[in-house]
Length: 163
Ligand code: SF4
Ligand code: SF4
Ligand code: SF4
Image 1 (cartoon, rainbow, N blue to C red):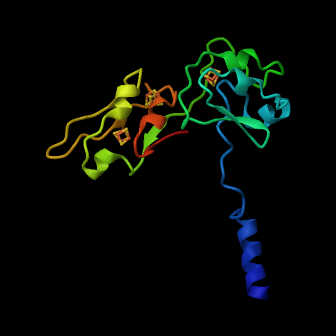
Image 2 (image 1 turned 180 degrees about the horizontal axis):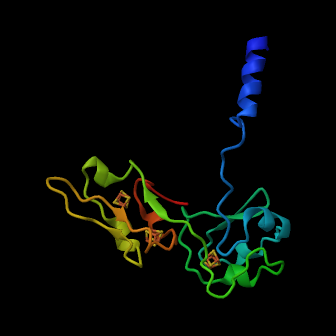
């Protein structure tokens, strides 16, 4: 590597440019903060086995949520079988703070009428305000959205992300 390249790499490193920007995978609901979760989780796989909607998959030995399969019903079974308490449901604690968002792949943004996501949202967090001469766009109310993921797998263009 030429001196210039080395200096450029060093400057980038010092500025933190080369730090991994990848967020941790989405853990099951009521998971402890990531570092604590990784310390406590024994990688037993029990949460994935018990999950009735099969949205818990194992990645690098640890569980993560995959909404492309189905939604979370917040049944709490994964917490119940987590004996090391890496998942811990304190009284009144929300399962997580994740919310749904829609990206540019949405059919309605391309002029095609579609309300599939709204039809599957049990808490009516997705509204479709009318537009003049164009199909209505889905608008997600973040205060109502529970992050259940029910809108993800049903979207025909994979336009919804929950995170
Ligand atoms: S709360 Fe129930 S549906 Fe949700 S991830 Fe846990 S076991 Fe699966
Ligand atoms: S289901 Fe997908 S394509 Fe249809 S309105 Fe919702 S985000 Fe757009
Ligand atoms: S994640 Fe669940 S609550 Fe939020 S908009 Fe999608 S279906 Fe509705």
